Image 1: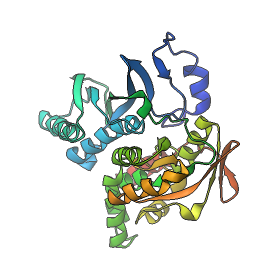
Image 2: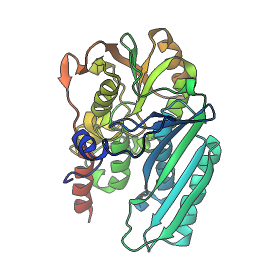
Image 3: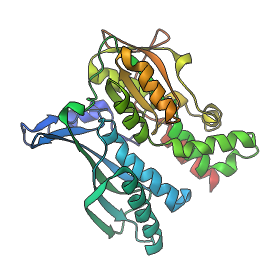
Image 4: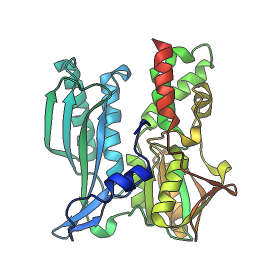
Length: 339
C-alpha cells in the first residue's frame, strides 16, 4: 500500500476479490479490477451502480471543484450506457469548511443533477476532525433501465473497432495547469497555458458515453482514469478477453496536452484522463457513433481493431498497465515547488 492512488490488480485479487459478501442471483455484474460499475436486477429492471470518492480541491474554486467532483461520481455509471438516475452522497467534511463554501458545493451538485435528471435519494453530511481535502467523502451513483440496454464492460468482440474520445491526459492537464498556472507562465507560451487550462471542462465522459450508446451498437465502454489511455486499453482488453491492435497516430490529442505533460514531466499516455472514453463498436456502426460525437462537439476517432488473443499492441509494440499513475507524484512535487 505504499503507492498513492487506486490499488493495483494484484492487491485487488489478493485482498478484495475473494471477499464479496453473500452470493445473490440478482447480481449480474460483480466487482472486477478495472471495471467501472456493477449491476443488479430488481423487478425486471437493471440497476447499474458505481461508487467513487468525493474529490474537492478548494484551490480550483468551490464551484469548479464541485462540478468536477459531481462528474467523477457520474462517469463510472454512465459508461453502462444507461442514463444516471439516482445519487446517494456522503460528505465527511474538514472542520474548516464554511457553511457558504459547502452551499456552493451542494448547489453545484443540485444544478448538475437536475441537468442529468438525477435525484438525490439519501445521504450523510458532517464535519469531522481528521478529514482533509481533497477526499471529503464518497458517493454512489445509480442508473435504472432495461437490462438489454446495458453496455457491459467486458463486451468487446473480435471484429469490433476501437474508438477513443478526447485523447490522453485530459484530467492531468486540466488539474495541474489550473493548480500550478503561475509556475507555467514564463516557461510556456500564454496560448499554450490557456489551452491546457481549457481542458478542465473536458474532464467528464458522461456526455460522451450517453451520446455513443444512443448512436449505435457500442459493445463496451471504459473511462480512462488512473493509468490513462494505456491503462484503459489494457483494462478493457483484459476484461473482454481480447486483443487490441491500436495505431498511435490515430489517437486524438487536444491542444495544450503534450506541452503541459512535458512541463510537468509526466507521460501523457499513462496519466489520469477522466473525460476520455474508450469504446468498442460494431464495425457497421462506427460512422454513426463518430457522427453523433461530432454533432455533440466531442473530439473522437477510430484508433484500432479488436482481435482474437489478449493484451494490447500500439504500432506493433505490446504495452503493459502502468500500475502507478505519474499524476500523483507530479502533484506532490509541484505542490512543494509552489509553497
